[in-house]
Picture 1 (cartoon, helix red, strand yellow):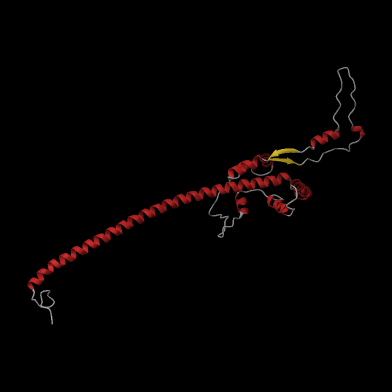
Picture 2 (cartoon, helix red, strand yellow):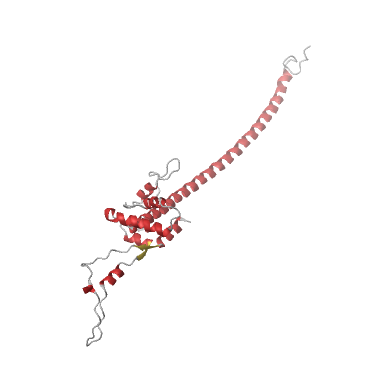
Length: 246
């Protein structure tokens, strides 16, 4: 899956938000019950809704998309997260290990009391065969237990994971764009070097051919001019006309 598709899919996922605690000014009692309909000159009087029913309605689970959760949480929206790869701030060591924390720092993501990575660590401690609903219940219980002390919530965890996905996608795209630009430039330089190498090879072949022609021509002219010296010299060694020695 492409990074863009992964972010688009993640942003459209629907999250069920935990119900809020009911806020009651006083304990419910029998006096809060709905009154029966009492006839009036203008028509029947509608019974007031029971406080308990109103509280139940107010605390019913709601749903949000991931994009809505991130928008409502403190910090940048998904489309505002755009870390840029920078050679001055490398996130990969010589062994090819990537420091994701450096990417998130470049994206200026806010800190969260319970991170998405910690949720993954918690999930890794649960039995693999445990049903997904049981796993969700366990994580929700843990989050609820930590909520008052740390301020962690389902929303903050979802926002943290979503923003990190957006940061990874943006950084990977930036890195890929820079790598593609470098590759294009390097390939063009290599092509130029290869063309120059071919040109130099042709120049070497041409020089060798001219060398052979020059040596052959000079050798022949040397022999031709040597005939003049032989003509005027005595027929003794080293003249080629000297008789062979016994």
